[in-house]
Structures are given as C-alpha cells and as structure tokens.
Amino acid sequence: QVQLVESGGGLVQAGGSLRLSCAASRNINSISDIAWSRQAPGKERELVAGIGVRGGKHYADSVKGRFTVSRDNTKFYLQMHQLTPEDTAVYYCHGNYGRVTVWGQGTQVTVSS
Image (cartoon, rainbow, N blue to C red; front, side):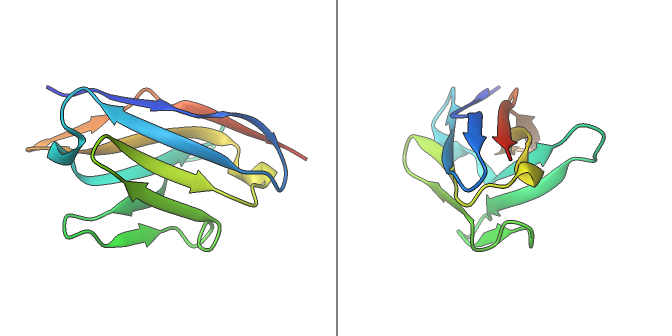
C-alpha cells in the first residue's frame, strides 16, 4: 500500500498565494492520475486539478489561470495564486496506485477576506 501526505496549507489573505505539496510513502512516480480535490464545509468534494496518465494537465474552471499543478520525482504540487475566500477548503491529493485509489488526509486552506 502507499500513503499520501499533504502539506503547505494555512491561513492566507485574499489575493495571496500558497503552494501545497503531496508526498508519497513510495516512489511518487508509481502514482498515476494524480490530482487535487477540495471540500468546503457543507459542499461536495470538487476536483480541482490533476495530471493524467499521459501527462496532460486539467483544471476546474473555477481555478484556471490561478492554480498550477506540477510534479517532480519526489512530490506533487499545487501552486495557488490570487486566492479568494471561495477557495477555503480542505485540499486532498489522490491518485491511483495500481488498481487502488489512494487519498491523503487533507490539508486545510483558509482564505480571509
């Protein structure tokens, strides 16, 4: 099995930036279809951004132009700019390890107005 651990969340003012990181207990390159989702209180979980099996990147309309997803040989990242209070949520990284979808425990992002 593999575990994913997010970090980098916190409190930031509107207009600010944060970079989230996701580390894996095994080689991060063994995780496919890796992505970030978020869940705000009282709302459904939303897919935010990800990198597909062939390397293509995808973004929710709500974050296009503000968020950038990337990965290197050790971690998976979500760079967030121009944050708004509507971005406040718990952010999760997730991906496929073989046939199993694994999720991290989440990291809280709070954007104050």
